[in-house]
Image 1 (cartoon, rainbow, N blue to C red):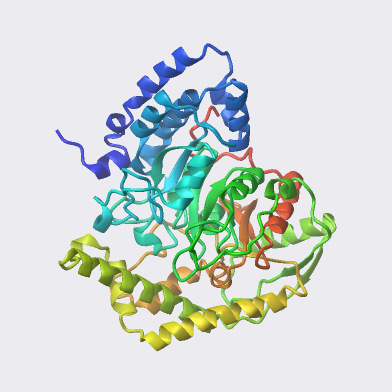
Image 2: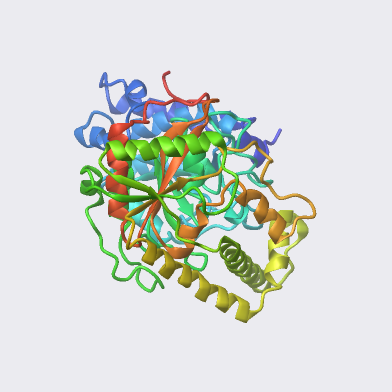
Length: 510
């Protein structure tokens, strides 16, 4: 009996899709007779450590891939992190090539959104693109490959990244490894869940409104959204940028060094410096002026989230930083209106283009009701409204730049609550753009400002709820101050380590 794609990705047919594991294990046995206990060591290793093992010969790239696939096999039937399976491609590559680069031989997952990997599908979580095979690699994928990473699949994401929870009809819901009743966040939920569950130490992610930071927050991993244009592939009127989610600050810093650099022809990024982000992450920052902002936007914040953020503020003070309660005075009603205008009109323009280019209408079955609604709503905006929204978006940037003349860093929650239950913030029949976005922004009200201003912003996994759900702290800095954030993150990681925490669904040896 044929096994459907959804059954494969949700576990019923996983044995078929991952039948390569025995082959990989056999290759592993023949490649090395070392007594190195990779499974046990993996649990505390980051991608930098794994790359060092491979460079020394303690572990081969084949062994690393076999370990990763075996771990995926353990947790994917429960969590549904995998969207596209490229294991055979990775195996074939390793049979004939020795990966070179800083992360040479380290297994890696791309997000199933916003990138192209030659010869493979990137579905963007949608039936509309289920059979769209890329002919070339996108620039960020070329840089991942140049770093030596071995891509073996793509991770779950909601349709076109339009939700801040990774739930969808085409790929199925992705479940949180800390409690499978709860959301992973979105739209990089598959990547964050795979890292949190111990499948691999680092995975690709993108952030257009919080899509790195929210999943990192909900899944208890580290996630930095870089300055607009610092990494290639900026999309969505300049709001969406690409990077990674990972276990350690140094992985994020080192990967940013390898990704950073202007992409020729891009509208953003020219003139941004390529600092030694790794070095900065290893050095404590100077004493910083930190603005603790719990008043903007005006949303109800869960008491446990407030407790965790205030604990972080107290930790900052013990580290020599000055913390003051302050807010920049952002008009969030206007901010939300501007973001809705830009995202919906951008989506409408693209779907209109797809429909025209292929010469037939997009059917109701090819898109989820959420996306059809956004398509309709986006068509209501005039060109003048879109142009005005772009001008307002940049005005917010000037407002935040003025605020940063007084404060180096802003401390806020990533979300107003710990990870919500599945279904709590998804699209509902009858929603329009306002009711849909109002529902999820009651949870995720804080992150999207920094997408619109282009500032770097990060989720640091410092806290947890009384029920054991992760609660991150969000730090944001002025444009171009990615190194400052990484320096602070490294200091916090050394002061309050998080890498040994284990979720309920975990692929490792414990």
